[in-house]
Picture 1 (cartoon, rainbow, N blue to C red):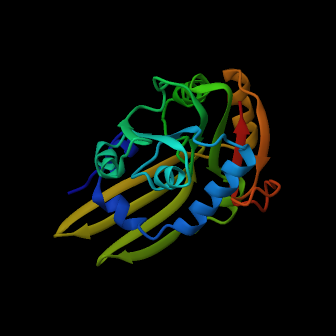
Picture 2 (cartoon, rainbow, N blue to C red; picture 1 turned 30 degrees about the vertical axis):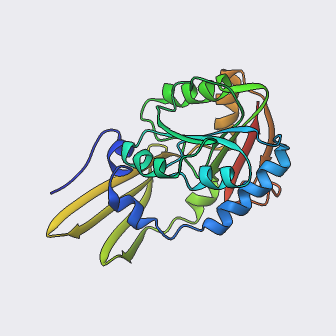
Length: 243
């Protein structure tokens, strides 16, 4: 059995295998980043934050824990179903398409951990930036935390095998037609699965063009989760703050 889809993210993110493969992501680093970011932005006490493409809500739940009113949205129905068990009067989750504005404004909109650039249609990338802008209140900030594509391409590991929960994932990475691609194959319960992650290899210049087209003003650019200076050659992340 081989699984594939035009919009790869609509199927891959909704499978349990995605969460198995990435279950060891560093929550300590993610939480420290949220502390640093919210402090830098000086988001007001009990301020409102939209976590756009929130997955199972790990960032949203922590932001709520440190005092914010948080809404997490994602296209994955399974991820939102899981996240809803953690809801309270200041933490809510909803299935939502990031290309469209949500129905209320926020003090900040966070798009974290390279949750951008998935679309085959470039128009949807611009629509997403416009949607973020539409969801900011008068004093709000947008944040996109993206991979630093030049660094990732220069340090790409072409092939890797990773065993998690007795499943051996075979990973192949390459660059093709402006996308950084990861082919994922594995066999479990005697079935062969194949998924593919495709993310546009956006540079800072590409984002600047999108921001200009969306009428968005880029305020700051950082190269890691400690908000240190961005370098195209050496930074692992591309963290952009705009309004």
